[in-house]
Image 1 (cartoon, helix red, strand yellow):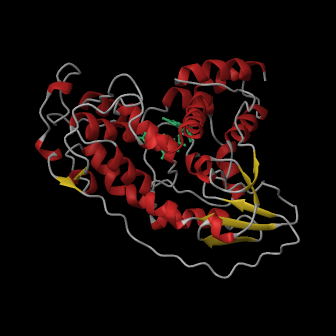
Image 2 (tube, protein in one colour; image 1 turned 135 degrees about the vertical axis):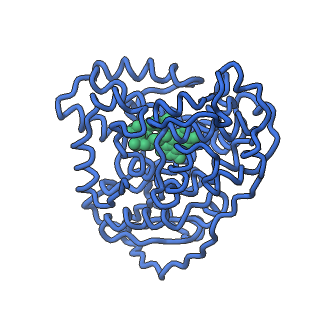
Length: 361
Ligand SMILES: Cc1cc2nc3c(=O)[nH]c(=O)nc-3n(C[C@H](O)[C@H](O)[C@H](O)COP(=O)(O)OP(=O)(O)OC[C@H]3O[C@@H](n4cnc5c(N)ncnc54)[C@H](O)[C@@H]3O)c2cc1C
């Protein structure tokens, strides 16, 4: 079972052993050479430019890195979309989702009993691992939204809750991409596709149809039972904070947890975890513990469970949609090309411009 260590040296070791050439050939397969870096990227513990330039320094050419950096660019595109639309990313963006029959979640997803063995295997492990391969996430979204006709929003909340790499932009927008509310056609995966990429051999399932047949089938029995996803409630209390008002205060969130942020400078360091945010976007105790373990890598950091506005300070923090309401000094978010400005209506409108920059960089 993949694990996600929380010390910085182990994260760099993971990055330094990653093979982007093998990745390009194998990433779609369940046992492919994926990087397992997303939990660190989502938490802002490492940044996309840092990953890219560290790989370049190992001598890889742009061509060798292209597939991997294109995936990293998806993350940037989604983050930019979040900056642009704010909470608008939690609504159907381009078109309303077609043919929705339920706003809940299939009970079979929660019970890991969809009848698709390759998915059930992953679903059963999911709360323990906090991770799913990209293809499994896509298969689940296809099954839920396009075969089961559930609206994407509740299933996305459930998946986000368990993911160690939970990122509201990558999550909501990937679900919306699959459900065709942020793309032009719904994504379907049939049993043959699942068998190929998960190396399974199952037949005669509710997905064992051609791509012509699949969109026109009635909802399979196994997806009919609806459930409400009820996240585990937890209440946190903060120890009393000690803030020295004579020195600056560096403010972190669970999306901007960079150990290099003003490292070595004298200052108060506070990780702000706002209950109002977690009420709306709950995360599992495992994910919260992961955040706290990453934070523990930042010397002197104090954890504050409370609203930023109640702190009564004007801190220094890295810009991110999660802290759009913070007052203080906002420092730039680390994009691969921070000078790339404009409106990017589609991923490829972003990627084509970024690619030109990276080829020359
Ligand atoms: C329904 C659904 C929900 C998702 N929810 C999240 C989420 O909450 N958080 C999250 O980080 N990613 C999410 N993804 C994107 C993607 O599945 C994960 O980033 C990826 O699987 C993480 O594993 P990895 O780091 O080993 O990926 P790798 O394949 O090694 O990719 C490297 C990096 O590229 C980026 N990336 C790769 N694929 C995508 C993609 N499709 N969209 C955006 N960025 C991508 C990620 O930063 C990832 O860490 C979701 C995808 C789908 C289809």
